[in-house]
Image 1: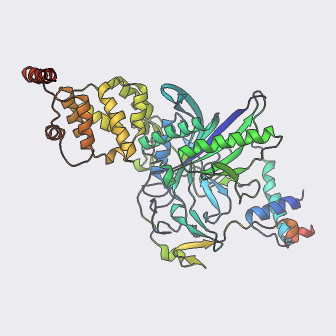
Image 2: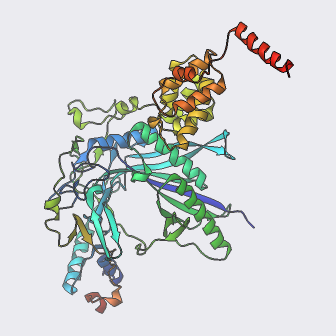
Image 3: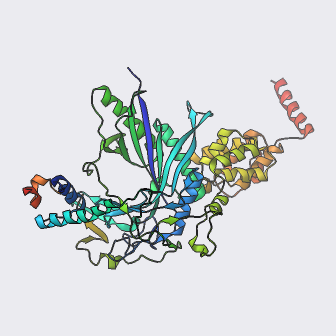
Length: 456
Length: 108
């Protein structure tokens, strides 16, 4: 049987982290009373016009730069037409012809055979990043055969990140999305929390035989977590292979991932191929961005976005942070991955290192094995840890000064975990865990044990 | 060149317009003919202009919350509402196929 080559591409929508919406001044907030965060423009009332939010443009430029894209100094807005109850205007304002950023790349890492010690770096090309409006939310009420529409989300700014089909399986897609999520969170351009709909991923999947043209692709939607992303893609690849090996064909359709059943199912409500009748948005002139060279002399600062200014102020990206951690503290690359993977863990680690004489290479063991496993067991975030970095540092100092043994230290940590406000030193004294250093005292104890043996 | 029935049907589906009668279709034909005159101009090497606003400055707004909180007004014109939600049919109701709907196009 000829081998199959799966091909996976991703379209990712990241909600921009901003106070107000892309083209209007209503608030961006998750979970608010229905239709309370909606302006006349968002509700598409006649006579309203879009006004572009500066912060959203900056977020897109930052993200484009972080993903090694070329930023288009002139980009355009278009209307994409389709009818749906949560799209009151009947069209979405997007950037179809000339988006704000193109031709970038994202590097991500994969463990070979699930071994973190064996990591390989892969790259996926970024086709483009475009600014566009989010739609409102539809709540389907099947019992009363109606849909309830909440427009709070309508008009929120999105960055659509289009990844070329350079990936071949669920694991690669999941790793790429995870790295993108970390980058967005580091930049602050999106909080990228999938559970709150701030990061939505659609996967395009097809299979073909090596040397032959690409197969028909399906689009998989309704994926709510990175774990499900990998599952959905792998299921779809298998489904397509089985279908083709049984002599069937693949339809160019949209499928939804059913997380309960672990499979993809055809989506209803997609009536044939859509014709979006793209047209230029007549109410918005081209978006012009500047750099140090092209900066106009007499323009109001507030009206000017300088790409170079933004570039200079980009924070260290996750890959750079990891390298710095490895270089500065002598920890293993795989350690740096775990540190960055947990929100706040890297900062916790650095805080402990600052306050203890113990070598970072030893501290990392306590952080990754003892602290992190406690947190995971109790489903706590680093910020919620009952053991602060100060307390842990105090404990590790006692260990480093050989005032307690390593076993005793673990006992003290278990006690600290209860969060009763005792210091490590207090616990050591309470439980009499001090290591005896006094030579004479040790001799007396040994002698007593030997004497005891002789008497038997 | 006349616009085909297929294209007219397609347009009725996409834009939910109703060409209503031969006068409506005629009107459309004339509009297309009028616009087609643009093809007579040699545009080799000329950047297309898609908006008379192209030299205008796109105004950038500060990221402040200045609108919203007008639920009552927005729902004021809604024919039906449920606890401050707008009410819509369960899904898109597609326009019936050409053979199945009453449209002037059927006769063409």
